[in-house]
Length: 456
Image 1 (tube, rainbow, N blue to C red):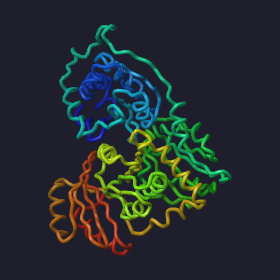
Image 2 (image 1 turned 90 degrees about the vertical axis):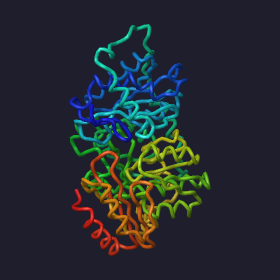
Image 3 (image 1 turned 180 degrees about the vertical axis):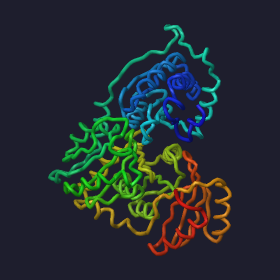
Image 4 (image 1 turned 135 degrees about the vertical axis):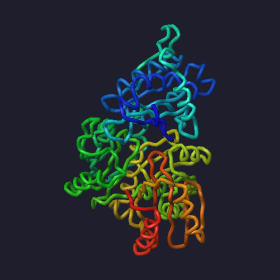
């Protein structure tokens, strides 16, 4: 069990780190994260699972623990993580648990948890408490209880209502041309969106739309450029207008333009925000601090209020709720919508990108071009033993810059900036830098890498 309780979720290898016994204990302990009224009330807990072969037995054990703790359960079956969030919100459930390891390799599994209204449960909001409660349960205390003391169970298919919820976001103008879109489901849960995408008024070209938790074609992580190669090649081969790649549990999406070039998720955040702001001028838009300066600039230009936040879904969602924000996005490809219980929804982001292309009547590269104002690095990882020591070294070396410690350390100058932060999920320091031009970026990256060590 050691090490599976992460900052944002539960994740580990099956069956050595996470197994049915632990899943059951998590179910028995989940009530401790709920409000008193939800613990004692009739509102159910929504439980779904992804396509991994071990997700079903873990889900069954989890449901057994939930019911034995007295909680009622709605089993939504094989679903994406955003579908779980939608079900929690629309069914007015007490909370939700999705059995998934997201983009991790096939040997992994885990759980993503939420409270009423799809509010996140994370390191700052209860995961340490859950870990503590799970550790207290001995084998002889986890035996099933009498049937009349158990919570109820029902299975429910939410695809029809979920599809209707999403399709109302589409705004294809009359006479608009039919866009050709390549969609890479990466053998993950994006596969179940096929009927929905076919109703979207596009010519869809599916790539890897067979559910397979072994991920036989490529890792289900669109943040890594190597996992976009097949998508880019298919966009070029077919002359498509857009390419879309989902991760394993379909809560993230990456975009590729008609030239096969990846579109940064920070720029996609800005573009989607601009479209939403046309209907809700003055709205707050939350973006993570790794984003290009162009994102905040563009949001302001489109009449919005950009709010910078630290990395992590729990922080983005909390800030969106605090400011009644209309939208938020992260560099990792998460997109958060007020219209979707302030939860991430990759397919809604896809639909908003379609809306943008229809309205602008331009290519994706033409739409992105005005945001390519700076030279920006990808996120670069460094395995560092003394993380704080390295951060202190950086703050001393660049003490003449404008500094903040919202997440790690960010230091800004007029013509360049960088952020270095400890990873919440891996033993790394992560670096992002941006500059007025490529020559200055290369110069500053060389200086930073010399201080941080060899990238991994």
